[in-house]
Amino acid sequence: MSASDDGSIRTFDLRTDGGVVNYINEAAEFNDVAYSPVVDNLFVTTDSAGRVLLQDARVAFGDGDHLASEACVRQYATSLRLRTDEPPSYSSKRYNFDSSSIVFDPSGRLICSTISRYLPTLFDISDEQPLATFGAAGYANACTIKHGDFGGTPENLYYAAGSDDFNAYVWSVPPIDVLKARRQDLLVDTKILPDTPRVCFDYATSNTEFEDDVAEDEQRSSPTVPSHISIPSSILTGHRSVVNTVLFHPSLPFLVTSGVEKVVLVHSPTPFANSSIQPPFVPRDRNPHRPPPVDLRGSEEEDLGVLEYFDLLLETDRERWGGFVDGKAPAEDSESDSEDDSDDSLGIADLDSDDFDEDGV
Image (tube, rainbow, N blue to C red; front, side, top):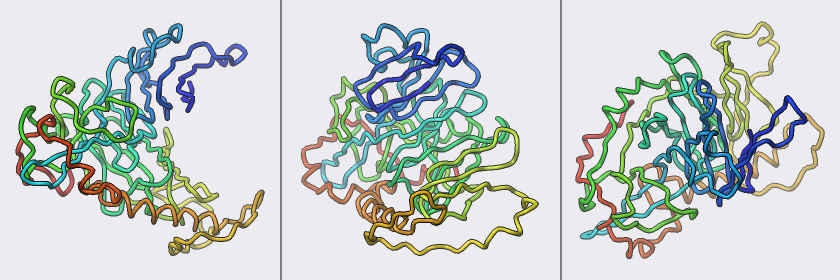
């Protein structure tokens, strides 16, 4: 099964000539698709409109006349509502960021979406509202496309993701009932107040990245503030630039990371037999200046010019999006951009900030 930026999901049968056997279309570009590891017909998709959609192959695939979003079994709440500080009538703005990747846990009950410019977000497939977000001091995802992964067992489950700070983070996933108990489901039809959480989850309703508030009759349910897992169990180092992809070995205690560099690193709790011959790791200072081009095609030598180019991208993205996780509007969103965003339709309850976890879950 393949996701494409032409707005199609296609399945191929490798038992025959490998041709397309089924397809489904969408108005937005598809970013990723993943099959359930336990239920044959279930799969989940992500797209450039920020949507995460659960699909049933028996319904989704057809003659191509319907859109994936019209045939989905469930749409998850992935749109972010950012409260602005404009007394006395506090307003909000909706952000539909790309869900760049999606992955099932081994049990098939959980999925985690990598939301660009925000945090990896965990869902129970039977629940449209998010269970939890993963974060840490230093974790960032504003530059490049990231892919996370689950590892371990259902009893000792872990999630890992790469970061813009050249590290990979691993979090222990608490039991589902614990996460649900710590999640805050906000009341509908209540004014936004100063103590209202700065960021909550709602539904993506259009193909645009930014939306003004929607009318009350368009709301599908109350906004949600998921539990936040802020303390990673491990931080993996060794890269000299952005880490894009993390992958657990299915049976051995290995975790593989890769990113902008030409190298792929294998992390293990114990040393490899030949690890003593590896050169020592030398960290690299960031240099956010556009370097002259260097032609190293076919060479195993690292192209420092490429790494410095990504340093420049990181600097630009950090200036604009660096504070969004903490509830700060993007740098180019001026105060006037939110003046006509009425708070009447958001419907968020007045919650005290002490109700939310700051350390751990």
